[in-house]
Length: 172
Image (tube, rainbow, N blue to C red; front, side, top):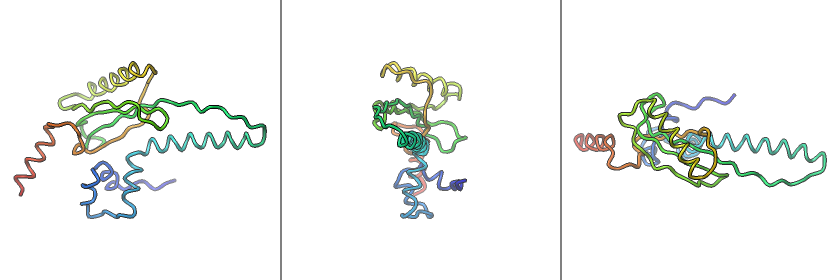
């Protein structure tokens, strides 16, 4: 069984590249790969599973006649949460829709400040519904989840980011 990722590495994977470089534990040989894997773990695992299935099918096919079938392009939705920890309130939410290895749709990030967890879930359902209508494909659930630190929130003005900026100026 693989070793569990360290808590610091998991938290660092949510930070921007520049913020991660300032950490005292930064190792230029290992950290970039670990951060990439942590950020894209679900998508990488899904690709590995599908590759394993294809390999098993091709191994079986080698014993008999081989035919080629066009690979269907699946559509998958990926939800992006901007929050510090998994148990922290959601700062903002966004989504991406992928068809095969191509991003076909990106949902603009929205702040969740003041929303209850139930309202965030409703917002996620609404995102799936709108994306399904837009692409004319039935999206029942999100295939993967990505968590990013709130400092990477692209929405400006951002009340939480501005608060952090103001406190950093007062400390100098």
